[in-house]
Image 1: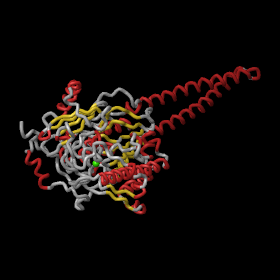
Image 2 (image 1 turned 30 degrees about the horizontal axis):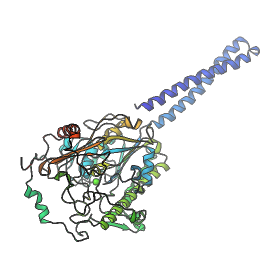
Image 3 (image 1 turned 60 degrees about the vertical axis):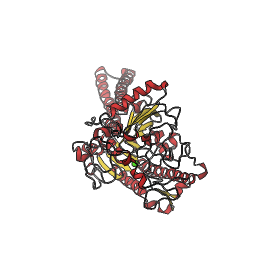
Image 4 (image 1 turned 180 degrees about the horizontal axis):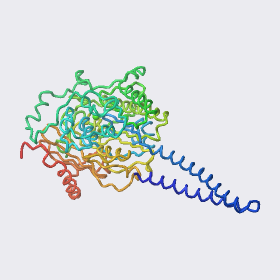
Length: 542
Ligand SMILES: [Ca+2]
């Protein structure tokens, strides 16, 4: 049982004891003042009678109180809110330009994790890792089409675990990656699984220099402005406000609202999973969210580039030669880059608005006190830093860091932020513990319940993120501590970097060869290499 629940139960019994004693004293003193009028036999009889009545009343009251307490300690509900491709572009994360009032309020209601990291910077593998509680290096799942259950039928996903423990598991929107839903995990809202491919078990191999560049030679980037209309996600659009009701994320939130309404009278707790598809490309949102931003206020990052560019002094593996989401195979002008950044912010505000609507319903149904709320994103996103407009392959801070808010109404740390390094992998065991369920078998994360009680608790545990570029083994691994980011690359783009996250937030300087940090590098290299041992892509030139 959680420490604060223990404390509450203890307090009830102390109050009960003192109430009993005070009524006993009161009763005796009333009778003694009337002693002269009463015969000794009647005194004893009346005293016993009074004591029994008072005692029964007190006990009734105290047990009624305990029942109130008990009702608030009945199984907690879970509201599981997910965003797609959202980096920490929230006002609550110190980003002044972001307009995110609902998420900012949610952060104030609970604990904001300042340094939370995904385990893989791509939708499918990141979600599979969080939802199975296993590291990508344990499952070997690095693709968007592989189904964990085809390779590990015994693994129980997070929603399925809650379903097995009597929860009504209700899904709306993107939770697992599209087409690879854990259909059987949901009581309602499960989607037909289209991809049942087992996880690829191809052993480490290598690509040649010719193979590496072949795709680029065959499809050179355009310098002319304007996106290729065949690349559907590479665009933004401010749709008329009246179309807001027809947009996907609006419907996702509407369904979550309907689930909440239907849950009020249910006798079992709920696990409502609500997955928004924004700010994933294409960047489409109602115009009113674009209007929140002044184009003149949109600044580009100091390391903005028009095409993906390997920064001076960093290994080739640190940047993919081509973007996967925006500015795909084309250069970004400053003007277009600013418009795209504004559109990304508008989509973040649109998600914020939808989150606000869902929370409002929870409030109106009187379910806030009995519901744990978690908000997270599957990975970050680069908005033009080093010419990158995507997440795929990013082992930089912008690609791996995610917003992560956790509200447990019972937690002592609510209203604070935690500077400790945590992983998305930690969410599964955390929710299990907060709901009083046993630690699920095989999960590799750590419950964050102690950090909810004391967000600044000592917590010496780094976060790991990996990337597999060619399907021939891991091409990159990053280790993040509170102060440092160390990344190591294998295969054709091999090399390493160390950046000082405290003093170099834009990660401009590679300190890996600086003798002053030799000891730090030695330590972090040992952690990184141990993490991916035997699983890395080979170099074409050994
Ligand atoms: Ca994603």
